[in-house]
Length: 605
Ligand code: M6R
Image 1 (cartoon, rainbow, N blue to C red):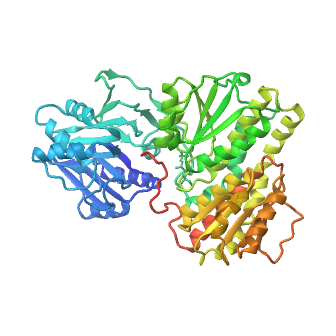
Image 2: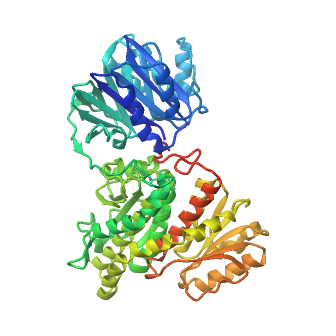
Image 3: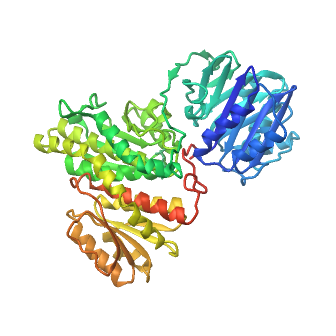
């Protein structure tokens, strides 16, 4: 997704803007640009493609301004090219924008009647023109307020002004924006991660707020134009964040970090002395919870689906799962005795944040399961359960999925215990079993060599299917999502029992079908569904934990993951599917950390 940087300093800023834009590359983008104020004029440079290209432009023709804004763009309105890249500037003002202006067509028509000529196909350029128009009669702050009042949609903005050479104005509605502080230098950033190499002192703008930065000062205003104070947070220093070490890419690093992720997450939530889960202060008395609604997008949604099986197995609580982009527009009936749980790695996903906002408006209790604890979703929810996975840079979510599953499972156990719905022995045994998870994940990762061989079989395929029953069904969905987003190969995740109701028609000679069949209550049924696929020529890749299964000639490949207990099985089954997607993508020479068309943090709806 788009990313914003702004720096007001007492020295040239372009090198630091470029370095910060490189930190934002992980979000996924297609063009980049920078504008600084130099000799009382706006010096704008932009290009399609990578930040490296922009850096080359700056080497040829340096920008020496002490104040500037930079942007990486993920195209929404208009193709990814140089003209559509941000900033969008006139002689007097330059703008970078994250988000979508929904009434841009109407505003454009209005501005065209006043003689404004648009160069790009973007929605952003209307902001530049509106500012240019209002600056004729007023100062920058007032012109920004006037402009914002005309905009519908979501935005985070960074703006510089030719005639006011010491200020950057930032504004937020819907899309996140942070301010960083340092000595004789202040910063604007679409996330704190981009600012981390320069400062760990951060404030976050809330919706409707605006900030004015100079090198020595930052002022904040609310939507009513009153000056306000903002809290300054000290964000944690995560070591090795931007270091791939010996790994080829961040995704493989993150896959192989999973034993550590599991260890950290489990140790954060398990009190080994008391042999208990240290989650307290549920926002609703556990015994009074009527229903839990779990909401997320993409991989986070899949972790919610897995959790549904756990909650139904271990508690008497009614469970509903929802996709955030659907939930936010449905006519949902809210209830004070329901707990609404939002799952999001980034904590910035626009649909999930909007769904949370709706819950807040309806005054129901909310909880978030997030990786980024400083994020909008974490800050806006009543209660936060961090997953402690550390920064996840690869666009494809791996270790965060693992962390989400662990935290959801641990919360489910705790709720079940608080409601006296699990017997003490099972509760304590489940806690002990959780501690075995890191070692079991390590063993699962040892399957990599076999998975590399398996991956070769996907190179000529026209598509693939992932099948599972019970909690292996959402794991099948997740396996299919990983394969399609990384390798661009069509992959369909399906409940194995549903195949005969339609998708069986897709099976043809040699189609790769991944069957996820742990030795649980669905095992025999899943194997029968597998036979139906074999009879129709499907090439089977069986993933199981059954020690007794023999890999017959009808099964092209078999993988055996370790076993701890049935409830932890989906966590272990997810790992080989991550490796499979990774190796298919590697063989196909795909951009592993930045798959085409995708973004890490999806801040538009
Ligand atoms: O940051 P979030 O967890 O809210 O992100 C949700 C999805 O955008 C994300 O999981 C996406 O599906 C990943 N690319 C999957 O690997």
